[in-house]
Amino acid sequence: MPQMSPINWLFLFMVFSLIFIMFNIMNFYAFLPPSPKSSQTKKSVKPLIWKW
Image (cartoon, rainbow, N blue to C red; front, side, top):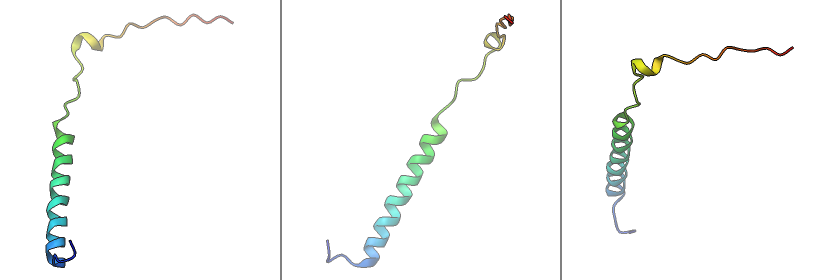
């Protein structure tokens, strides 16, 4: 809307930018990666069979 003052445009831009940044920060820290458990740490090691 061209009749809006530039200060109002700047204020809206800052408000929406802060909301966008806060939304991204909350999504970043809300993700919890699965922690390795003691039963999953034991890896089954296959013996390497070299065929020369």
